[in-house]
Length: 360
Ligand SMILES: NC(=O)c1ccc[n+]([C@@H]2O[C@H](COP(=O)([O-])OP(=O)(O)OC[C@H]3O[C@@H](n4cnc5c(N)ncnc54)[C@H](O)[C@@H]3O)[C@@H](O)[C@H]2O)c1
Image (cartoon, rainbow, N blue to C red):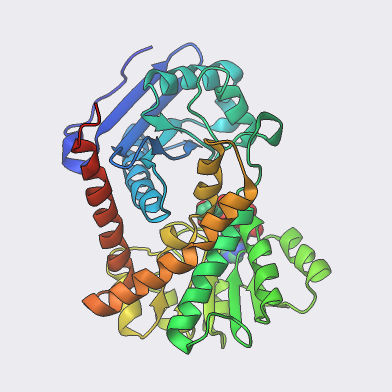
């Protein structure tokens, strides 16, 4: 075990702690990034991915852990922001010893960081990691876990969309609106159900024929289009990106006819400045990390002993948080993405500061 690299200056990113973990025998190379523990232990998933270089892995963990601090702060959780990456191809190197070695590193942080699933890691992996550490969530139902996090993610996205509809059209409902869902995966499918239940028309697309088949069989009233470009250019009121990141980019934004963008995908803005272009086009964008927090709310609830109704109630409050952000954005004359960042920073500063009051 040992350190396999150091950053030039991790302090310059604003992170509290960046830990490099290596276990040569099992092939583990992991980086745990803790951006902030101002609100509580840092929570964020472990991404297992074949990065091209150590620099790329480091850049990803720094970026993702910062994002989690903002997401957790606005979700109202008493949790800070962290994330971890395991560098390598999970298909090739994932093993019990590797996951358990990783679990020991998580344990060594003494509860400053809680891990969970992300790209390349699954509930079953969390159960293996849990054999070495208490600081793991997103576990299987048999082990007291919450199961599929996409259920509350979709519910939260729907709540954020209701708040956006109210802001733009005066009523917190999608009834009579045409909503374009890009990506009919775990979240997109549940979201489609909520939208139809609310009286919306849904037009959708996916690259996976199985996802299309599922929709044809379960929701035959959904109109399917060839691809995201066709969806974006069609006559929709709301665009819901529920596939990959970067959905809002220099190609899609000029074509977009929707008045509202609310979706589950992480990192929807392809580059800084897109939020301003959307605002200038009169399109209301609800920040992804605000509306897609239902999943982290679900896994965070597990830390107390999972209670679905309690977690759902908290995910429902994404409606109130989105409203507050949209109001703040109007008051301060900034795009909602900027208002959301300000609100998260305010909570981290104001609540984090209370820890300076000695209690014993
Ligand atoms: N699952 C969660 O709890 C959760 C929580 C927060 C954020 N998210 C984010 O939401 C998004 C969806 O998550 P998911 O769990 O539903 O993933 P998923 O893999 O189940 O679904 C993604 C779907 O998008 C489709 N897709 C991929 N590329 C596409 C393209 N170019 N055009 C159209 N469809 C395309 C895939 O075929 C798949 O059906 C991801 O960005 C994820 O990071 C998910």
